[in-house]
Length: 211
Image (cartoon, rainbow, N blue to C red; front, side, top):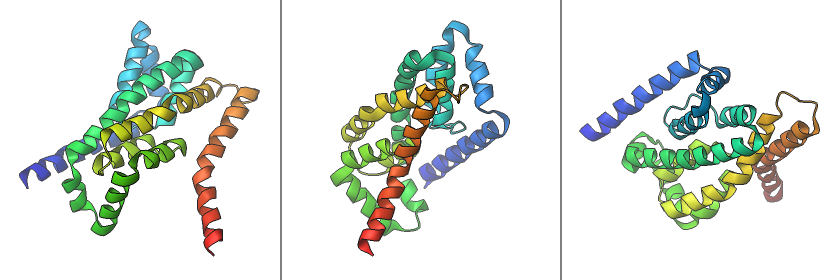
């Protein structure tokens, strides 16, 4: 009981810090802070990526845009991949630290939670892979994997496979965001929209098929 209470207090403290950061700092503030770091800018950027799953005040898209603007598509992709690999670990093990019991106490529908946990144990790798390619929020997927029964090996492998191509796509989009009339911006935006719409198209198709 004491352990659960301590975790709840720490989680609420982190949430309070995140809300403060959301209210006082935006993408432009973070970009300027990284830019002013000089030769340490890549390191600062990577560290921000790694801690982002805990201090969730900046969306992943915001960081990839920053990487594209500051470092270009090649080095930006490299730094995002390194930071993304680290943030994936952070999100997964932070959820593990909170623990299944902690979330189960908060969950209203325990049967549904158990169903998804069993599903992740059996088909975790493919499920995580689909979530990554379909552009579900990166940290949310990491949390969910940490809460459920998927093995770390399956989770991490399924996360790393799409990390490089997806990172390049979003960083390239970020590098062209100040030139919206260029073909590169339009093409990358259309690809992002197409990937993001796949889950909704599949859901609608299945709905019509089952009707």
